[in-house]
Every structure is written in structure tokens, then in C-alpha cells.
Image (cartoon, rainbow, N blue to C red):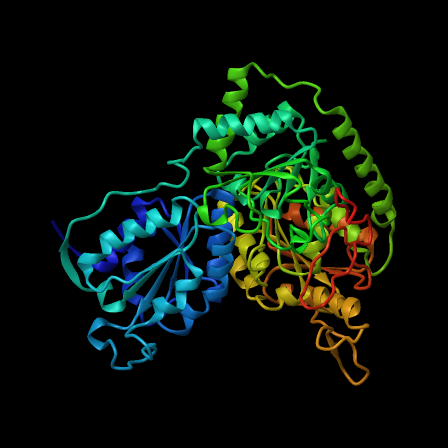
Amino acid sequence: MALKKGGDLIAEFLVKEKIPYVFGICGHGNVGLLDALYKVRDDVKLVSPRHEQTAAHMADGYFRVSHRPAATLTSTGPGSANLIMALAVAQTDSSAVFSITANVPTSQFNRGPFQELNRHHQADFPNVMRPVVKRSFQPTRVEMLPLAMRQAAMTMTSGRPGPVHLDVPYNLFMEEAEVNEEPAWAGFNKRRSGASEEDVSRAVDMMLAAERPALFIGHGVTLSEAGAELTALAQRLSIPVISSPNGMGCLDMRDPLSVGFIGRNGAYPANQTGRHADLVIAIGGRFDDRSASSWKPGYSWNFPWTKLIQVDVDHAELGRNYPPDLGILADAKAFLIQILAELDRRGISGGDRLPAWRASIEGWKAEWAAFVKPGFEAHQSPLRPERIVADCRKVMPDDAIMSFDSGIHHNWFMQFWEARRPQAMLNTWGYSGMGFGPSAILGAKLAAPDRPCVSVCGDGGFTMVPHVLCTAVEYNIPVVWVVWNNFAWGAIRDLQYAYFDGREYGTAFYAGPNNEPYNPDFAAMARSCGVDGYTVTRSEDFGDTLKAAVASNRPALIDVHVDANIRPPGTGSWELPPIPPKEPQFGAAWTPDGR
């Protein structure tokens, strides 16, 4: 039994759990913990951005690249409330974040002190957090801290990872008690659940019997670090790979077996592969509305005509949107290792399989390449969106890390980006929170200081978190922001043009007596913060500017003026009930019975 302050217990826990960063902002409620963190500053670094939302996005980005959790620290009240959207992004995209919030002292519970929420329960902030975390813990005595922290760590990194919440009345930081300390957990990817032998055998039987199989991979493959095993299976059995944005790079997307992203703004070969497959092996993917064309038969998938093997570590995802013919509760890497071992046991070495199926896919790729080629080659001012994607593909090295915000720019990159490695394309996919991309790239760079880190973000999203410039300078984090400047909330403006006869209202940025397109001078804004700033209005200039910004190894921002009237070609569908959905602009829905 050791006599210790609660703040020291928390600081020592972070060291034991190998949590290297705390992203947080000071407040009267957490000064006691800040003092404890000062003692461990050589092992746990405090980074203080200018907004709590960015703190959580930084922790999210750090985890996605390193697969090591980071922590956030906020004070009582509004500072902690600012975490909500960012933690929702982390939860829906399965990122482990250890979120520590301060609350009012236990002696003042239910007395309505400064910043207490008590309408329904005393010190009720855990109820605010509950929908956006895996579990919320609120120890009310110092003796309760060690168990709560160990359970939080286990919850955060076991099974499907996600954020957890530790809400600490701030008197606990300074109070002492004799406690039994808990052992370290540090358990992410250390304990894997596998499939039964019977299910592995049946899955292999189904794969070998299929004439048009396809793999559909999601974030679960990235999280389990199963890229090598996935690549081995795809190449061994000649199975094409469709990827969700958070699964991109697990198979190098320049590999002939990669067919890209599926759904409304997916690649045409991916939608064609999904429509015509007779077996889909889905591993760690959710079949959300955007990657399933709102579950409309024939637009991306054709279940139940197509057989489905669904593998996921989260039982809640099995059969959520499509009942599987074979549902398997297992870690992605464990499952793939088992499948490869079963192929070895049967003496199946692979080879030149499924020539007709591969020929169909190559034909779809050729059709798509011919259709999009003119846009990729055209030069104009303002820039065509394709030119930005093309020059990023040309300039960025294989180990580059890219983050994307919510917006029309993300649609273009989902459709045309070629991720080369896993954990290198960071998306706000499930919750689509604006501000994620410009913020998460800071955490990504701290996780991979020797790799180029570039955030492509919309003008609207960037102006929600412009203070990221300050954080990059304060902590010398040399990232590059490419601001996709189309003077509009472009993705929503496009919906108005598509569904409301072009009645644009509240989606474009205008100012002045003549109602001219307006945005701040982003490059000047960057320079005012000590960040290198560039403005690009000609497509001929973007590639060299990006190359120079990355090479400078300094924080830099490139303000790129983009043509808002060029839209990504829809190859699937997306339904906004009750509005009738649009048909694909390239390709057409297909069902086996012709309906």
C-alpha cells in the first residue's frame, strides 16, 4: 500500500501505459493534474493546442498512425464539452483515445457550483460523454482511481478500439490515499480472437468455389495491421480488393488487384466489381450507406444474390445491414492468418486463377481511365479538382501521410487517391466531423516525425480550426495544409444544384457590395502566425509549390483556388430520403435479374 495523490497516480499510469502525449488545455479544474504531469514531463509530453476539439483530433490522428493511444486533458464545463464532436469521430472510426476530464469537487456535488451539470444527476458530465465513448468512468475517491484507469485502458484497446472517458472530481488530484496500484495493460493488438476451425474451412471452400469473388476491407484490417496477410491472400487467390477509405493502403492501391473505393463517389471498377461478384468476403468493414449506395440493390452490391462472408471483431456489426451467409466474430489479422494456413494445409499455392473475372475488371478499369483522363491532363485557372489529386499522387513519396476533412475535396480523393501504405490515409468517415483533417495531421506528424504529413482540407473546414497554425509553430510541427478554396460549402452546394434546381442558399461565401466570392487570404493568415504561406491559382504551379513546401520541413499552407463547378462523377448512389436519388453519371446499376 502506497500513500499517493490522485494526480500522481494518473501521471504514473500514463507512464506505465506508455502513453507519450497528453493533448490538453489548462483550467481551474485540472491545475492539480498539470502539477503531477510536470513531474513526468520527460516521459509524457503535454501539448496544448488552442481548442479542445483539436486536442481530441490530435490524439485520434496520433493513434491512427502509431496505433498507440494518446490522452486528452480538459477542465470542468465547456472545455470538456468541446471534445464531444471529436470523440464522436474517434468512436465511429474506432480510434483509441484516453480522455481525462475534470469535474467539480465531491464536497460540492449537487450544490450547483461553478460549471456543474446537475439537472438529472450530480456531476453529470459522464452522461454528456456516454454516446461518444466506449465507456465512461467516474471515480469519486482516490482509492478508486487505479482500478478505473486499468479498466478504462482495457476497454479502450480491447476488441474494436475506441475512446474512453475518465471523469475526475478535481479534489482527487490533490488528495492522498493508500492504494493498491494495478498492473499495466498496454494491450492493443496483443490479444486476438480467431475463427473456429469449422468456419475457416467453410470460408476457404466458399472462396475456392466462387467464380467472381471480391474482398471488401474496412478499418478493421488497418487496425489489426493485417496488410501483409491481406496482400498475400489477394495475390494467392487472384481476388480483387475493394476498400473503404479507412482501409485504403492495406493493399498498395497501385496493385492490379486493387479496384478502389465503392459507393456513390467510388471508382467505377469498384462498383462494377461489387455488382457482379458472386461472393464478397468483407473483413472489418461496416457497409455504411455511402459505401453501399444506401443499400440499393444493384448500385454497389447485390446481396442476397451475392454470397457474403462477413468477418468483424465487433459482434454488433455482423449482419447489421446485410445478413451474412457466414458470419465470423474474429480479429482481421487472426482470420487472415488462419485462412492462409488452411490454404497451406490443402496445398493450394494459388497461381493464375479466375482469368475471365480478372479480364472483366481490367476492362472496367480501362473504361474508367479513358473517361477521367481528360480532367487529369487539363490545365486551367482556377484549378480542376483532378489536377490536385494528380499532382499529390506525383509529388508525395510512398511513405507520406495524408489527412482529409469532410467536404467535396474528400469525395475527389476517395475516388482517385492511390494509398500506398496502411495507416497513411486519415479520414473522418463515420461521423464526418469538419476540423478533423487540419487538426489530426498535427498528431500524425508527432507519431511519424520523419514522414511527410499533408492535410488536404476545405476552406470551410479549415476556418473552423485556423488555430492549428499556432500549434504547429509553438511545437515546431512541420506539416503542410492544402486548403481547397472553392469559396463555398461545396459538397452541400452541389446537393442544392442536384436536388433543388440550383437554388443556392447559405452554401456559398460572399461579401461586399457586389456580393463577390469571399474568403480570407489564407496564405497571409498563415504568415501572420509564422507559417509559410503560398497562393496557387494556376494548375501549372501547384505540384512544384507542394514539393517545395514538403521539402522545407517547416509548417506551410497552400491556398489553392479550385473550380467549384466541376463535380466528382457519381458511379453509385446515395439516398437522402425522401428525395429520389440520382442515377450514376458513369455506368449503370445492374442486378442479376435485370430489375
